[in-house]
Length: 301
Length: 268
Image (cartoon, rainbow over all chains, first blue to last red; front, side, top):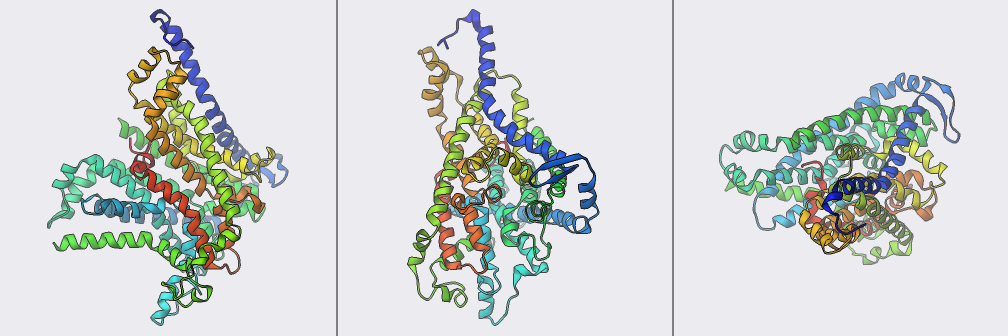
């Protein structure tokens, strides 16, 4: 490539640079196309075909997969509403905890840097590892929680083996795991508002809550929206926490669409039904993504 | 005054809750087996050798695999993301807006939704029980984010700096290597750390693709062990401690840039 272009040749140079640009993009786009487009198309086709784990699709189109998941009360009245409950529960509790956390970490005090690091640290830890530790804490015989309860003479239940305690615990671990990301995002948003405005609206004094609602919350709204949408997507997609803690048990009482589709595919050898559930998740994610894109567009304007 | 005390107290509670699992992990790792049921918090006898025990077992294998997986993903990712980001940040590439939107769209996606199709794709390419297959999928899933972050950093470099280098006789490529990249270094480092941590932490694809123990990374290896009938929790916690050391170290290294990275594309 010539070092400097003559001014007259600038039009052809521009053309050539545009071609170089596409060439630079090509390898990345090729990998993305193979790893994203092919599986999406394949999932859609599978959901309306007879699928076997080994041979793939066989025969013509069929509604069998959809019929079986849509006529299954465990899916319709169990997994689907539970997925909704799990997602809304984790996201709303996460926001409820992260907003005050971000406000506390925004203040100026000695050791603020360390405090921030400690709160954000769990973000870097692999989710399955964190979940393994929580699984131990809630272990019925050896776990930390029951060990502490025993010192007060209380015999704790086998937390993760009972439906009515397993789901709340799962939600708690989901919230714990989502707080760091959400808090960082909100902290970044607070920094964007600027120290002087925050100082003026400092939570000190009798009407701190009023100041928070009247000044900080409206200014933080765009960032808060983004945090809500991204969390909704992450939590809906969540797999490691549920898989490590309960694998959807006991008796499928903690399954979400995601773990349910995983089990259909790799445990019960029903890839067709798994793919139909994949399509349901895909549609849900498309709606969330459209919501996110609209927010992002509005934000850049 | 009371309000201040309450706020500091709330902060302490927050830190304690977020850190609780890691404290439990460390304390359990240092306990003899018989104390696990009887001593919920501090051990009566501190067994420091527990920390070394996993290294005499399968930890070296899992650790090596995680290291290969994360390093391979990071290298392949940079190889693809740097030119792509350059095209989006500094060249008159047609359709920039469209490419960017397509990239955001892929970020919304989780591999678990299409895991059945991914598994079949990988097995038809004979990449199912290998780190190479995992590296390809991990790269694809972290690529959009890397391109996004690098584009922002490369676009922030003033045009004059690159032009000056090219006037001085540098080709575009050498201006990129010798001028642009060094200036955008913080961005490149942040990207590397994010991609590395993401690959180190990945779970569902590794769980699905890998069948032979020889290939398993830490996340899957420790999960398998934790799902066994009655795991040795103290040794498992010691292994967990080692599994998170590298990511914690990297995290501390880029903490300053964490907010920019996490919110790249989110808060513009």
